[in-house]
Image (cartoon, rainbow, N blue to C red):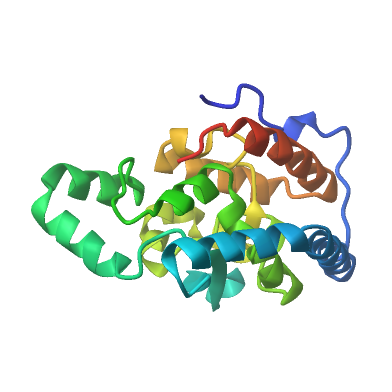
Length: 220
């Protein structure tokens, strides 16, 4: 189900411009507070993953950060340990899956995802370790969805918009339909966010994110 009224840029009553230093402090403090508050959740999830599918509990996948710098984007492991081999075999043998993957970089029926992993993805709990990326200064709480190098070609003229800011744990795309949107729409949301970036917009997106996650809107 697509989010009916995402926080559009013209919703903000007035643009608020904060310096990069203050913006960094706000992100750092909020991330630390969330890490402390959610530490029991981290422990429960880690125990569940280990009990059902063993180690590793988390994994880091290289994503494109601000100015094109690569960083290891952290997540709770939601896939089988040989996920790359499973994906390669599926794309080699299944033309429909291959077309879907090249179009969306996602699969509706992904055989790599474990049962606990599917729950984590549907609730977005798999992305909680990205709070450590925020603390390390590689991501912000709000920003474009972090992408792999191969996805940059989908951005076309909007590539510079993506590279101008840090990726975010959540963003305009995540609260505007998420996996129910097309990739072109996702790129448009990222461009729109960067063009109208403000602390007020970030706060609106963070508040909307909580509702989207609780309702599992657009989750896949």
